[in-house]
Image 1: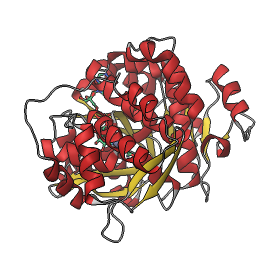
Image 2: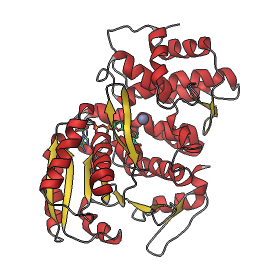
Image 3: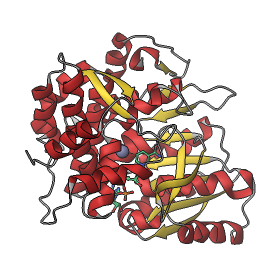
Image 4: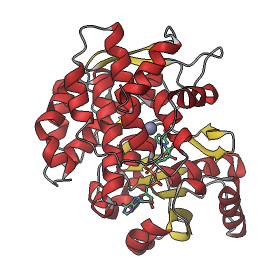
Amino acid sequence: MGIDSLSSKSPDKVLFTDRFFVEMLLQNKEIPIHIDLPGDRGYDLAFSPLQALPAKMRDAGLRPGKCLVITDTNVAAHYRNPLVAVLTSDGWDPFVLALPPGEETKSTAHLNAIYNAALSWNIDRKTPVIALGGGVIGDLAGFAASTLLRGLPFVQVPTSLIAQVDSAIGGKTGINHAEGKNLIGAFHQPQLVLIDTKLLYTLPRREWTSGLAEVVKHALINDEAFFAWIEAEMRQIVARDPRVVPDLVYRAAAIKAAVVSEDEFEQGKRALLNFGHTFGHAIEKSFGYGVFTHGEAVNMGMKAAVFMSRRFNRKLDQARALNILSQIAIPTVPVSIGISEIRMAMATDKKKVLDRNHFVLLRRIGEAYVTHDVTVSDIDAAIAFALGRP
Ligand code: NAD
Ligand code: ZN
């Protein structure tokens, strides 16, 4: 699966079927990756500067008029004015709503704030919602777009690493509930995702390293060649060296694009993207949201998953996988949480099937699968390993 099944559309629609073409496209990242979906719902990931947004929106069939821009105040401080300038220069009339930053913003209260702004702005069914921000803004604005007037056109302009390689791609939108994360939501594919990697240089360092965990995840589950490239360039990657950032984002986004093109509604392969997340979500929840970022918790979750994978797959090069994960920083936290508490936190994971947690394991680097056949002692041993408790 994966990159082999990726299709891409240049101005005259190139379809490519193997790695060779991905390498070729890396030489010319101006060519968008096309996500192929049934029923004319396909869309482009345009690797272009923010200034190209109006042209790309036209390519996606959107015509200037009113548009609703949702962002957070951190992102607005850097990019609100440039975005408004670029939109108005092509005849758009943007209304910008800048919400507070942070996970708590994925709530009914802020969803309602978007509804209020949109409806008092007199939108119609052609008014696009543009998400300018990280995964929080993308998920929230996308859910608003999916429900306003039973569905408005949606454009993603992701500004965090997680958003550029993961959350802005694939149409999962939603908000959190007291019972857990992302429990209320919808699939609503964007019309366009514009990825400008230059926006990533204002991202706080901790958010950069958090995003790296998801990038490594894409490589571990899908693409050994990409993993080897990460190993070779790890120092530059951690340092956010502009010589490696565009390739890093392009390759990681291409993997997500391939997976969601193949399995839009997570009935099969898309579930592999949850590698490290069954453990990670439980760690995030047990320590309390905000102690670790999502990416940090997923990094620890992947260590647990690698450890568990090795128990069942003797061919997995565990040291190689762990070596890269350990180069991505995680803050030390003074609070100690019991292993059984973390295991119990898995009980509310929404990815459960027939009341059993599923675990994504690695057969080897670049190949993952789903299993339910693990014991409580397998789980506890993996958690203990990830937390560094022998
Ligand atoms: P985020 O949106 O909270 O962004 C992280 C922080 O970085 C915020 O403080 C934000 O203001 C700031 N920021 C973002 N871009 C910036 C920039 N260019 N310059 C300066 N500051 C910037 O979180 P995130 O890590 O982007 O995403 C995490 C969220 O994504 C979670 O809610 C998670 O559930 C969701 N997610 C969704 C999917 C999906 O498929 N929909 C996939 C993965 C994650
Ligand atoms: Zn994640």
